[in-house]
Length: 304
Image (cartoon, rainbow, N blue to C red; front, side, top):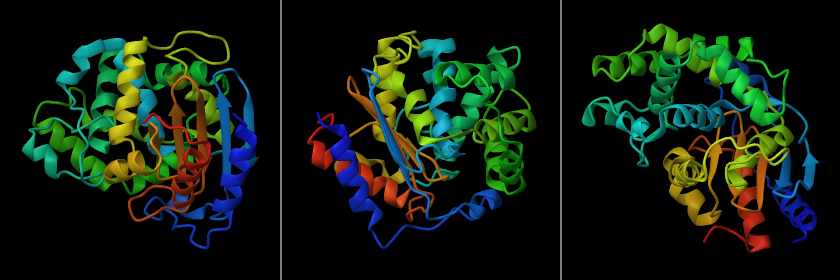
């Protein structure tokens, strides 16, 4: 497969689009990002790499990190984790409280904000120092030993995080948050503050394309069965209430973030990350969605 020519063709088409979406202004720090940035990086399971545009510029990965916190919690708890979380698409906005009332504090999936808060609570309960140990975990799977939380992004999100505060306390009222909401929220905002480039993000998610093993050194991160299930969740729930459309148009497991990043994996083949900070009305990168649709169209490869 000539990935380079396919990426170049898809990149050129997307770069020429007139519409680039709108920045996520509800988080003050994200409103300051250059809206013209656009980068993509693909790494195959054989270690071949292809990057274009701003693929080495770091950006806030935001909700993409929810896949990584789930991975660590799943590795710790195993199948017991699903007693506190469901695995269904929400069909509502990522910060909606509506279904928490209906399902008595059980989030619909780990990738909506309520689900990620429960995951953070699980990690706090089962690790000696969740803040440090989660960061060490991501440093290991990303091969980024100097990776740090971004204090200015975490503080910016915290300053406007009223719905997340309400959500965490609401889940606590149902008994599905064990720790103090303030501690869970502080950890949650840090988890969402991680910054990576497309190159780094594609490498970090490489184990989802490689049967649970890192591409760089073959080290196993999680079992194949857990890799399969998280990939399934990324396909059905990774794009909020646009997950069905992403599966329909792109046909890959993936996860988006309001920082404009999207990472997607084609199992046994590659991991790809794309970044363009302008968002569509559903909160997903406008150009990122278009690029990935072009990528799977021109390669004629998807999981279907």
